[in-house]
Length: 84
Image (cartoon, rainbow, N blue to C red; front, top):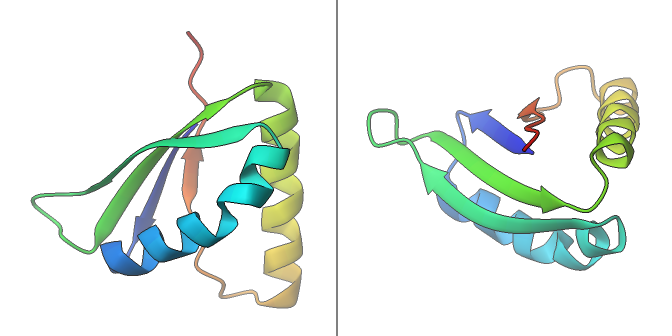
């Protein structure tokens, strides 16, 4: 799964992903790479290896829905589910 966040600091995303790593691992999601866009430094991309793509899709849909219900303006990553 490839994810992109805009208008964020790389260090903040890195810290949050490190804190969430155990919970992500329980769901079969493992951070592989983290980048900032060289042309847009406040754009961060990160790549997860996932054990079960369909499970990950359902999980992200549920987590994002819950976040939007709690805060309609929540900053959520754009997610792209890669196959292959």
